[in-house]
Length: 188
Ligand SMILES: Nc1ncnc2c1ncn2[C@@H]1O[C@H](COP(=O)(O)OP(=O)(O)O)[C@@H](O)[C@H]1O
Ligand SMILES: [Mg+2]
Image (cartoon, rainbow, N blue to C red):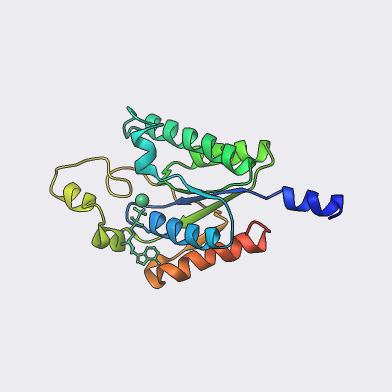
C-alpha cells in the first residue's frame, strides 16, 4: 500500500446531520433508518436523540427558550466532537430557534467539520394526528403547555440543506433522500 492509499483510508469524513422539526415530524424514525443504512456500509454512526440527551447531558434543563438553547448548544458540541473524529452524528432534535441552530452550524464551520441541516417539514396537522408520544392530545386537554409548534415557537429553517415532506413519503424514501445528499457531498 502506498502512503497515499494509507492516508486515504485513514481519513474518514465525519459529519453532523441535524434533523430539525416538530414533535412527531419523523426525526427519530428517519435518523435510525439512515443509521442502519450507513452502518451496513461500515460507517461509524451515533444517534444523539433529544430524549436520551435530556436524561443525561441536559438533565435539569427545562423547556424555556434559554434552556432549549442550552440543550441545543450542548448537543451541537458533542456532535461536532464526534463528527470531527470521523463519526456520522445523526441528531434528531427539535431545535426550535434559528439562532441556536445557526450557532451550531458556526461551531462546525469554525472547526471545518461537515454540517448538514435537514428540515423534517411535516405539517403540524399531520404531526398532531401521528402524536407518537401523546403530547398533542395532552396539550389539547390542557395537561401540558409549551408544545413546540402549538403554543411554543418553532422557527422554520429558511435555507436548510434539505427539506423533507414526510407526509408524502415512506420512511425509507425520506432516509434515502438524506443519504443521497450525504453521498453528493462525499459524506456517505
Ligand atoms: N416518511 C416518514 N418519515 C419519518 N416518519 C414517518 C414517515 N412516514 C410516517 N412516519 C411515522 O411518523 C412517526 C414519526 O415519529 P418520530 O420519528 O418519533 O417523530 P419525532 O422524532 O420527529 O418526534 C413514526 O410513527 C413514523 O413511523
Ligand atoms: Mg424524536
